[in-house]
Amino acid sequence: MVILVTGGSGFIGSHLVDKLLEKGYDVRVFDLIKPHREDVEWIKGDLLSKNDLFRAFKDVEYVYHLAAIADVNIALSRPELCVQVNEIGTLNVLQAAQSFEVERIILASTTWIYGRAEGIVSEETPIPPPEHLYTATKIGQEYLLMTWNKHYGLPYTILRYGIPYGPRMRKNMAIAIFVRKAMRNEPITIFGDGNQGRCFIHIEDLAEGNIAALSERARNQIINIAGDEFITINRIVNELRKIFGEIRVRHEPPRPGDFRGAIISIEKAKKLLNWKPKIKFSEGLRKYVEYVRCHS
Ligand SMILES: NC(=O)c1ccc[n+]([C@@H]2O[C@H](COP(=O)([O-])OP(=O)(O)OC[C@H]3O[C@@H](n4cnc5c(N)ncnc54)[C@H](O)[C@@H]3O)[C@@H](O)[C@H]2O)c1
Image 1 (cartoon, protein in one colour):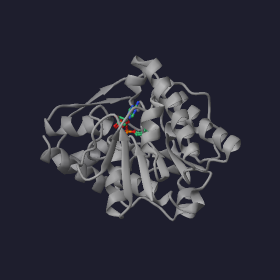
Image 2 (cartoon, protein in one colour):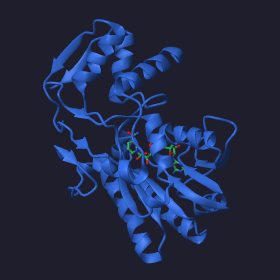
Image 3 (tube, rainbow, N blue to C red):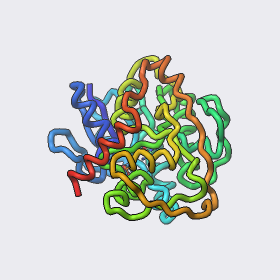
Image 4 (cartoon, rainbow, N blue to C red):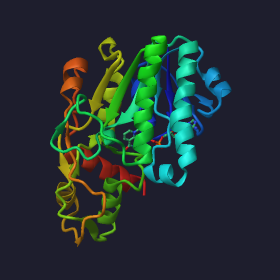
């Protein structure tokens, strides 16, 4: 059985590939760029080329569809590319999956689609109209999978990821910026009171959550895979103080669009997949700092 990972050379995909290989699965990466390791099969291809995709689907049983324009800044600066890759690219994956009669397609969606919801949000929480092109395309991807299931019976699982952090994360993400500033002894800028937060998830826990979703119980389900701690900006700074000692902080007024953040319920993942995050934020952050120290 081959498991295809589109976007397997990216941040999340590369960790998913590591875990799948560790567990003995036959893995194939479909990506424009080379995977981070040599011992995995790589089909170099573009989601926008049906020919490329059809080459990648031979003997595939499960597809993790992660390839996307995932950086919100690129999404906004290259809107046509974002819509093409995230929407038409997903449609192409669905058509290939249907032709090759794959068992299931597992989509990397995001808890960003809950928008400015506060309090506790679950998979049942209504999705508000999107405020960003990127989230519009992620909602669109979810609907494409559900529609394809209605039309052709193609089974799906939609995983709404919390915000992952850890080795190989993009350097423009808050945790990555804070860690590098702390290492250079530069002040960290906090916008607003610092009580805004997110349910960050360590990348290894996210990869494990993806693997748990291979369970038949995840068939045609939408499931949140997020951290179980609501981590505020102030908490990140305090954890960094435990590692680095004193850290200088500069306070600025809140930025337009900032919001407090919600607690993402992961009860469904716990019950259905018997999965829960194992890495506490303080431990995950230390591991990440170690990684940055070794790679800078
Ligand atoms: N990183 C996050 O904070 C986050 C949170 C929730 C959901 N997600 C979703 O998870 C998935 C992976 O995100 P990531 O952070 O690993 O992104 P990433 O940018 O690190 O990886 C995306 C990969 O897709 C590949 N790709 C892009 N366009 C392609 C195309 N046309 N054809 C083939 N490959 C192409 C890229 O080369 C890259 O390797 C995305 O679908 C993203 O929307 C990410």
